[in-house]
Length: 158
Image (cartoon, rainbow, N blue to C red; front, side, top):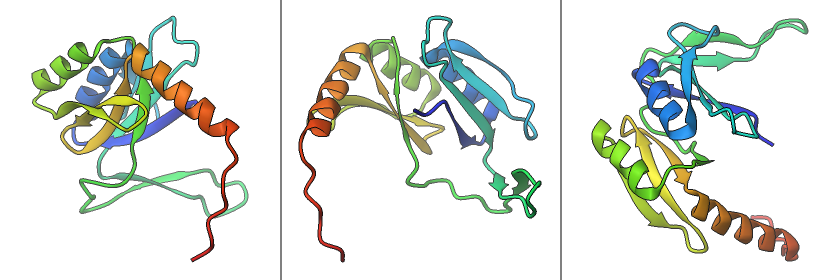
């Protein structure tokens, strides 16, 4: 179970505000880091979804001693793209998600992933979140449940 995630953004407050809208909750300043914000699901979100949004140049690093928690630093030239993404459920419709993307001038397109559909939503045209409407969530859950009930063949080591 994933309780929360953190992501980078050029404008953390703006991204958190849009994510709060998509998640059906809101956003607020977050006490960790500089200029960081948290988007969250609505009061009826049984999972208490939360996404922390940090400045793109901020990084988390492991502490150095047994008592040292995570520490924060920054990068002079942070990458704009990476392989990280999230799949997140929303109560909004496909049209509503795409309309928010258009409003923000961010890429938002409906896609098929084979056994299920998503809306690829590119925050700041940099980081992808796959948003799943209630219907898409049902497709995903049916596919994942079926896959978990099938034996998985071990692939030979390369």
